[in-house]
Image (cartoon, rainbow, N blue to C red; front, top):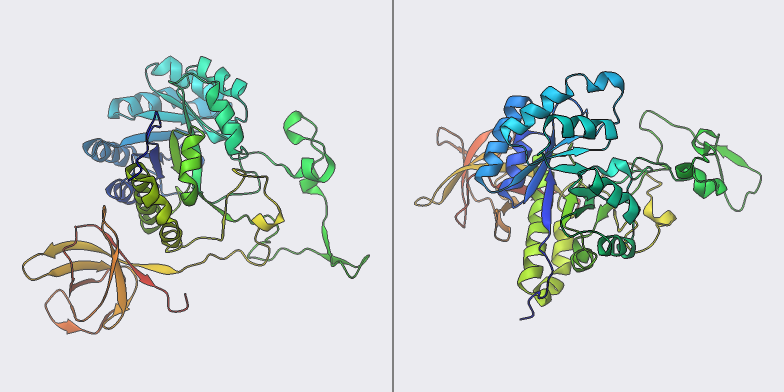
Length: 418
């Protein structure tokens, strides 16, 4: 057995949570920390987000399980956004938030003036791509920097080598990407060589574009946008589950999963896969490498786009975009959640989320052991009547399960055409 040796630190697994349900699911499946947002000051207005009461409940639940909670306040603030910000930070401190994520220097100033002992994480929106920039923020009291997505592993390793050990680095390892990966646009530089990030933007995004087929020079086909949008800037999703050793070697302290607008099923599935991969690597490197295909299969069992490595190994090419559609690959659906289990009768009580029927195969997803599949042999409703299927949303049913299962674990079902 070849165990990980030396001074390598086990990275934090950081999960998104757009609601209290997702927060609890992420924690149950092994997240070391979660990041959440309130109704104001964050960059995910369409996420469900947390009321202050829900935030307090979530922090209490997390701390009970030795998990940290980071709260986003990473807007680029206008004057009116600063009103009430000091009161908000005091409330976060009172309920025990473990850190606040900021991007704006003014917001950072308010935070430091109001609750000077609150740990500060700098958002990827601040676009840190070099070690001098990271050191600048460290001198302002920042304890962690979330690196820009445009960095390679080689660049991250160099940044890490020039930083004090008490400054940690966080980087995205899984989830959606967009054309402006870290809040910036690279189109001008690509089209004209004029760098928008150095004050020389050509505003290439405002030009009119046409398609030209290579065998028909001079024949310009207009690009239209319909109610579903256009796919020109439709990036593949990031996935680094098969590159965990390289991420650790580069000095990344926190592996961040994107997705504060994602469901409990998505977040629970991603966290479970990465938790197992990280733990396997630190138990035995050979074990991790032998299971690469298994990990990659696991991260296809929820809604996703095709995967990419982003900028980590080389600059993305045209193959990192999806030009034909904007739909997701949906290999498996969220079938339900276990509400209770009776070990004597081996019967589980389940809340249905997608229709399933007798004869179909479903997979149970335990929190800390491998998933297992079984075929449904019998189903009963709440009154004990035998039924053939569970077609109604959130219908409560009972079924025999071949292994003991924990309360609140998720159940998935393979799509027929996958």
